[in-house]
Image (cartoon, rainbow, N blue to C red; front, top):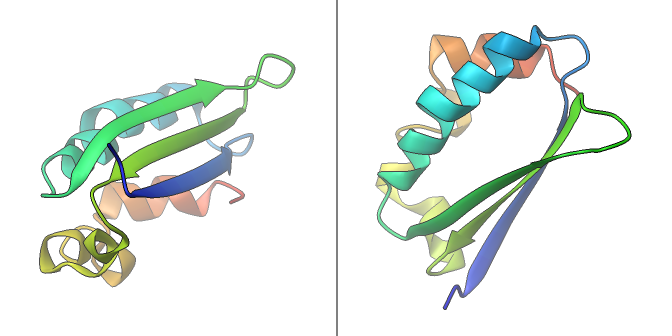
Length: 91
């Protein structure tokens, strides 16, 4: 059972949809799944506006967000691809 939850929402209207989905499926989620303490990662697309996505990430504890493993892929250490895609999104 998750003891923490990370919730993220993106409006990727200014991004290329194919690139956004490829980035999310091929880099973003696999990076997080590899971090100890991350559990189920799910994403939903808005029915009324398919350029809006909401994602949830189950965490073993909120401390996962401060772990060295997470810091290595997040915050100032985002990949070039992550920086490019997220710069085109409203969060």
